[in-house]
Length: 204
Image (tube, rainbow, N blue to C red; front, side, top):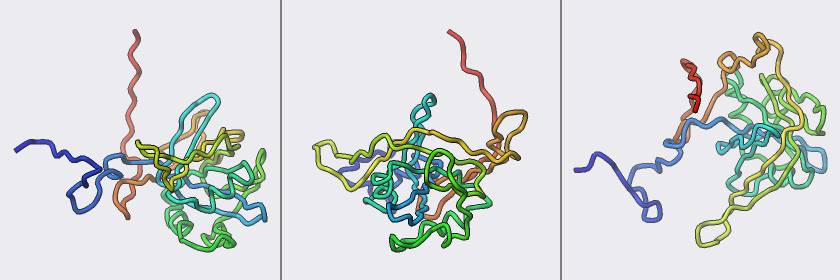
């Protein structure tokens, strides 16, 4: 018997639950705020989120289904990423509720919308940090054979950064103190930072 379990995703995983999200974990949460053309505030967490460039800073998130966030961002060209921290876990979870497009998720979650500086979209005032973004593009994902999927990747360039002063230590953002939470696999699994360590990249 092999020490390695292998499966072809096209043929099924053969396990009680698909392990993909548990393998590609933990993943920082894309807690995205946006504003509809009518002015309704939207706030929703996305488990597929990442940073793709440092200068200029580019981040992105993917939505399974063309949800309100994608529609708002395409219409206005702006969004904000908010750091979801352990103290804000319950509020973040409440903002994931499948509610109508005219529901303000800031109010629903009991969070304070703080005005943007370079965008017309508010950020979560209680969050340790937030990144204001201008939309670069929305990409509809396709499979290997070119079949369009109902998955939408939004990429944005960071045009403004908010950091709560108490998380700046000697001019450095204290990631450990900010307590970011991450998706960690199956439906209800989350993780947070434990012990941190440092390593210096070797020189040629």
